[in-house]
Image (tube, rainbow, N blue to C red; front, side, top):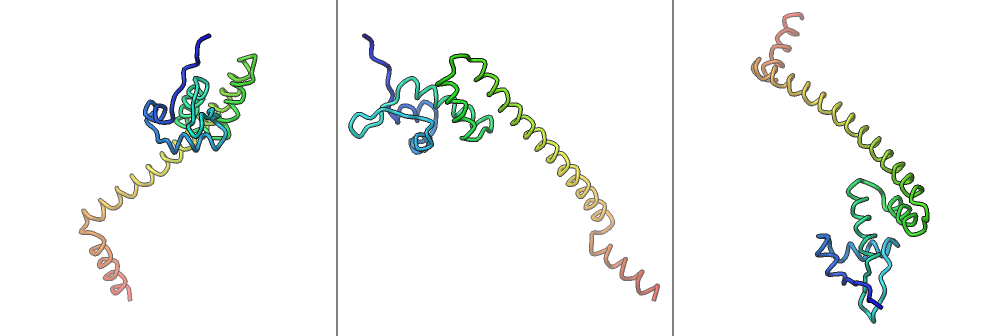
Length: 143
């Protein structure tokens, strides 16, 4: 009988370059469920895999609720196709959100470029003060 490989919270934190506090937070959220040996948390291969999948999901921008749902499928699914389909749906939603953000960013950048162009044109004409003085002179001459 071979013993399961185990990890301490410090080992996992070091391996994944995260804090122990982050791991405890994921445990509080129900994403990890280590055994206890007295007061010490003992993480198995399953917890390590779940942590790795959680961190990957966070990098992809998935919410903890979405990650938890996918992990539950990972635990219970006899048929991987259900898990893969659910993951594909989550990826599609995230991709759509990112594409919308990209469109929004491009619109804002276009506006910034236009404003920069206007500001440069004002500076070439002597700056905003010169433009304001020119407008005041025009108003006095019209009166």
